[in-house]
Amino acid sequence: MKQVVIDQYECIGCGACVELCPDIFAFNDDENKAYVVTPEGGDQACIDEAIASCPASCISEEEI
Ligand code: SF4
Image 1 (cartoon, rainbow, N blue to C red):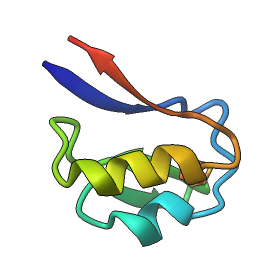
Image 2 (image 1 turned 30 degrees about the vertical axis):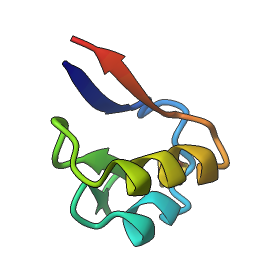
Image 3 (image 1 turned 180 degrees about the vertical axis):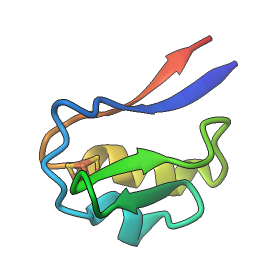
Image 4 (image 1 turned 60 degrees about the vertical axis):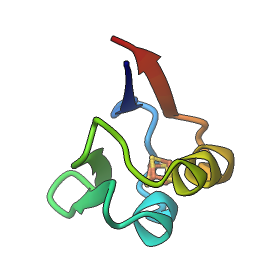
């Protein structure tokens, strides 16, 4: 099973992933970083697009 993960340290807070997949990612305004709200995933095409679009390349899917 896969889990969607954001490397919080690398995230630059651009918000692209949240705009692309609001069901999967949300924005933490206090920390100015995105976080994963649905680690189990969802729309795979959307997740793939977010991974490809992240300027910090900090979104990944890990086997758990
Ligand atoms: S697209 Fe990447 S850098 Fe931008 S908010 Fe999402 S995880 Fe952070």
